[in-house]
Length: 111
Image (cartoon, rainbow, N blue to C red):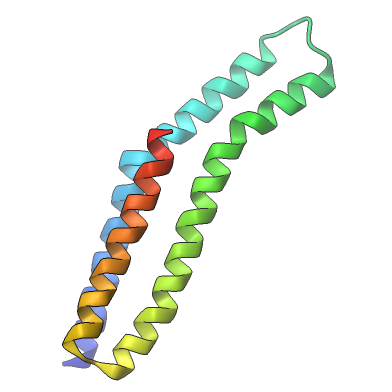
């Protein structure tokens, strides 16, 4: 029973991460690459200016990926605690955690 629950939770998390990647992260990656290409297309800028421009392009994606990673790590810690407690309230709180991760990632992708 507990093993089946663990598998279900793992599958839900995996589906959510894949959905975030498809629907948000890929779009952010596209914007980042386009922005970086635009930086490189400025012939009058110095090498330093181009590098700074590219860094600015990478920042939103890096922040979003860092946030998702951080939230997933927190979720894993909470899940281990909830798994051992194995109560209905804890399972409800785990679902809320998944929602928080999804909302945070969408917030970054909309910026």
